[in-house]
Image (tube, rainbow, N blue to C red; front, side, top):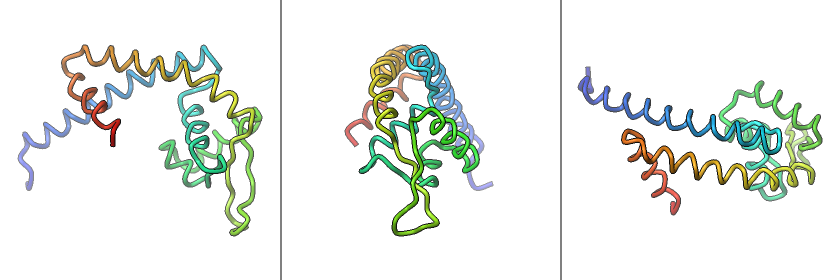
Length: 148
């Protein structure tokens, strides 16, 4: 074996710590966003990703990568958000096979309503996680990435 067993275990432990932090934060965000604006975390992520794009649109493949979902799961998610009037799909002008997903003004408005709950909950969840000795180094590392 090329890597010593303890090196593999250290990496595995790091991965488990990251997964624990992610799961904890995601659960808090899910509760807060559902309560505040009836959005899931992944729905918020889609609206946020689209709002950061010039023209508020992305190709479906880009959106799938931004949300870490499969193509089919992304399509189902976009369908739900489109049914709610938060997104629309448009044909790509230079590639008629391409479809963009675009944030509507209603989607932008809901995102702006959701942002305070998201940001406050994220800050509180990170502050809480920083008090857990196993999570503290990871939370501090995230803080160092903010300038990157």
